[in-house]
Length: 347
Image (cartoon, rainbow, N blue to C red; front, side, top):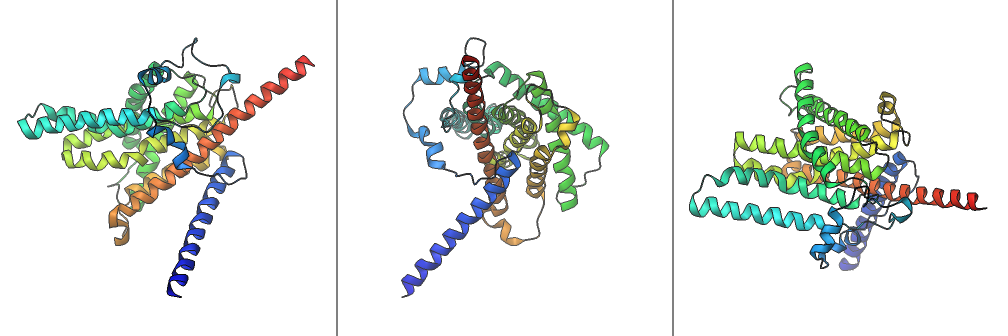
């Protein structure tokens, strides 16, 4: 009887979690314009990570985005995305960090420390950036463009942040009021730079917005983490490195996709887009995630195994999955419109 009651309780708990997840994805999906639950299949999405791939497979991904290698809309794949190259990039950067750490620990070489800071700051944000590069099914952004946004955009977003900090008092960043101001300043600074690059490259697809946002967020994260590590030591690097799976890169990707959702296709981003509900909801979500991340919440429970951070990481990724679904829906819709247009012309 006890086992049966325990089984029923477990089942109720599972059903509650399932309904909660469905409600969350449906709510976020409504922000994108579709009133449906988004099913999340993590094992399926990342199944290609565990499959063998050769150098040709990797190079085929890296050569996209030029006039000769950007596919036509008809050739774009609207199948569920299955990125894998990011895991190899992470393994490469991770192994490089380990070798530098051995150089430092075994041979006491202080010359290894700058390399550790650089590679350690780069590993997670840059690997995530490669993932967003892979899932951009339109293949219309080249590696050169991506590196430009990553480096220049990351630095510009830091400059914009410093300008806003000089204009808006932010406090210590740990009280809820101060954390909210910090979240507003940093996410707004990145948003402005994201909008600039979307206009500069004349981008029109949700996946493009995810990628440009991720590039600027990743650049911001790398330079910020390297700066903090220089001030506070390698422990800071280790903490910020694993936490980077759900911070600036993800928050900025959310905003980039939201900008695309809010603007008219083939039209530049304007001020009116920034007050559109499709943008504001995701923008406020990014600010909220950032603010709660920085907030020193007075609840001891949230400090257990970094519960506060894991909850926020989960919410951020939930938004990414919903926006990825919206990107695939957009690709299918555009292809359907193209087929309909051609059939009408042919008829």
